[in-house]
Image (cartoon, rainbow, N blue to C red; front, side):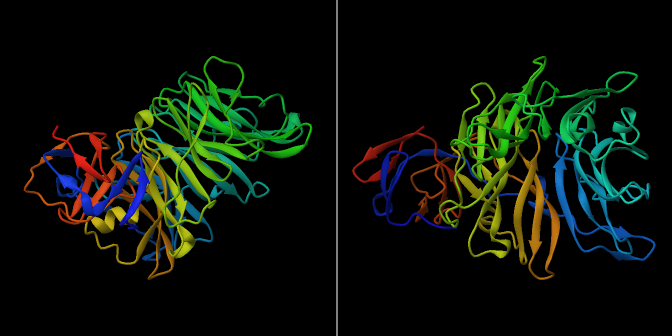
Length: 446
């Protein structure tokens, strides 16, 4: 990882690593696998029993609230299209959804907590090559939007509540100029109830619902609008709170910056996405944006995206541009300090041999923040592969005490408050228990 060797300003302190004094202090570490289970699980490729061969790529887009079920898409040997899949982390079993041949080139985006309901989108070659939202329920496909209009297309299903009762996405509203419109589909009663969500600022332009809180009370997404007097066209992020009949706009990092909300914490308190091509988080009450920092290996002004957040928004996942790696991006997590941690650097420092596998994007995270899923690039085989990563630490909790006999050695503080100690060969979480002492840090007894 990029070090902080030398002197620089961090959190109001001037740090000189040659003057660090170590007394008894408190820290959290992440140096062991949970219960002996591997930190990194590569999900592999989809197997075709008919041909006896595997496909060539997989990507993970969603994970259940408890981290057990992973959903996504990939190709299947002998098929001319991709298929959606569900992976069980408890058994290692991957099943694909190829039962309905009219729904092809499918990808699954989200799952209920028990893995019994999976939502996604599929391209249907039999219906004018249109996309269709689907729900997979254990052994059958259901396209709920056909309940509104059998010929409704295109349509998308992007997220589902933990209990499987509410689905959100977008559909073609032919009566509104042919634009896509966000929807909310309630499956809790005996008959599904379809709720079109209208426009943002009465713009009568495209809108998409991307994510929903665990209890279904808050939905986030984006709308494509034109703004006077400049007539600038672009995306604007919004959130909807039940029972408010209209969406509320989220603020952008600057005027007219394209902005989209892609995820929300399970409790609905934190919204994440992108504004001005930079990863952002919003407080759902104030709607003010906070920019999440780029990796140090990224050039200033490079792109980053945040896709999801753990409960209370403690950990946010996404990707940041990173110069010098294949595809020029790395999967990252951000803590409450909004500083990024490369998941590749995390694994390297934990001693995990990635064998040429580069984690390129983190798409979803479990409620407790311990399971992250996404996609990586296998540089040996030149292909994408889905992954599941176990974070073996909690952000700023569960302190371990080190005594003054523990020599820290050189410290890398670029990701402070997460600090890498060469002497201890592990991550340390240094909370705000420091005092300015000349040009160095003094770690106070706790």
